[in-house]
Image 1 (tube, rainbow over the protein chains, first blue to last red):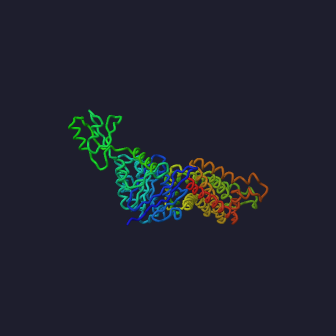
Image 2 (cartoon, one colour; image 1 turned 135 degrees about the vertical axis):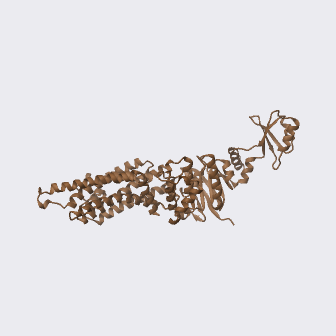
Image 3 (tube, rainbow over the protein chains, first blue to last red; image 1 turned 60 degrees about the horizontal axis):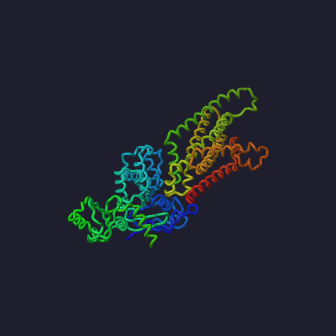
Length: 310
Length: 248
């Protein structure tokens, strides 16, 4: 049985007559990781601010584990860990001091504060930095402290606004692993504009554009969209496109500006082998073949377009 | 929970040398005045004036030390209160408090108590300093108590006002300047409109309500004035922060 941890109903936020977020509804169950995708200014951060009670929605409601954010803000907030866009750090404190304050303010029992700080540091790889002033930490480490303060009280729901910004590739990998671990026992919502990141860590994806939810579903659907049944082929002596169309499964061929050919095939077919054999047999000079992965923008445009058509 | 916020504020004052330096410098100033007061007392009282005009040592020294203290607080409270909220606004740390399980009232009260606790250290040091006179003379403890209470209420009122102006802006320096101007205005407003003792300006003046304490008179009307002053500005601060949440 799944338990709902986050319920957002018709969230709407109006800034000076313009709807920054309009009618966003979704639910999240325990143990799920939800990725929030969207271009800049789409309303990702605004939605997250409303989910965490930092901003009052103009319309709609939020409830965390059944506790309404408007009616019982204190109880609801106790269940959330939040990392805003800019990590909220008191620069004059050391990592240990800051995390102890965070634990205390989030109502961690005085006896457990030490343990909680220790655990959060281990999880975020901060153990070496205990006595350093936050001011003197690098951007990546500051980001980690930000994540550590969000998970220190072991909240039911962890909300991270662009957690991997400013981190180096190794740190990004660590943080992604951490998010996966968190997803096991908590619910996680993270926003990002990096598609591979979503593919790696999320179970569910939501795409938001101009304040509207344009896609809401499981990651598998998005993966399919992304691969899009296309192959990218490089031939030194390309034949006429009709020749390629004779290969079983191939539906359309398009010559790209960079000289490569984009071959679309019917869903469920795998014409790669047949194409290679044909290329070898007829001496087309094959030098490259790979699945054509569309970029985030393409998927995004596709999804927005579908939504309009539907 | 309120105390946890207060503790955080107090800790952040002492996290940098700022807190210690302020305490040391101000104590140095008060100490100098105190010593001068003791010296002058002997000069003035050594028979030059008629016995009927002589005042006690507590009052003589107390007047100069507490007079200085209330004046110095006028400058130091804005400098201490300016960063309470505007600094958090500027470095984007307000979401940290807003997303913790705290009500706005708890946040504001916590910050207020944190600052007042720091200033209470100063007030306590002054009163201990004056009480040391007891080793050589009979100190009028009632007079000291009324002065300490008055100074403490004055300082708390300054803090509440400073906290409010700090919540209005993201620039600590702007907050300090506005606070200073507002405090200065409230202190001297009765100077402009002297004469009519029952005038509204007189009633609003902070100094007007502080004077009885300085003379050694504890009046509940004055205590109520200070408490109302504090509650008003704390409420305004809560409302200002609530507007942040509502309007974004």
